[in-house]
Image 1: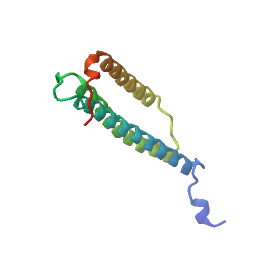
Image 2: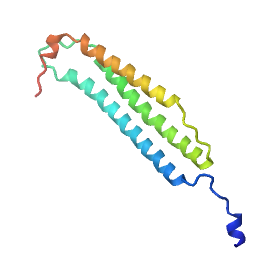
Image 3: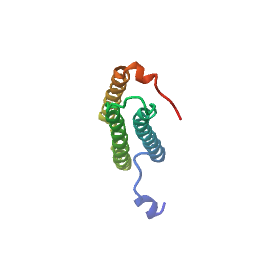
Image 4: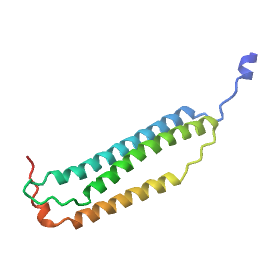
Length: 135
């Protein structure tokens, strides 16, 4: 055996490539979720615009809910990028420990946004929902 082969550091994790690819797939899933949240936020805001012009247009709180979804989507993209690089470094150092805080944080965010949607849907007067006209 040559001296080069003996002096070469051995990787502690033989599944390193598979771990990196799994990390990348997770990152892309979080990116899709963030884009979906932003899109849903835009949809909520646009639903108000679909009402006919003669219908009264109270300011309402729909834009706030749409903004909340969009902000949650942007934060999801930002935090998933940060998490991707942290996990990548942990894989390289063979020190990865799965954090529970991301699961709890994202679950709470989606629950709060879902409650906002339920509140918004049930507080809009029914006659305004029947007045939707698509041009």
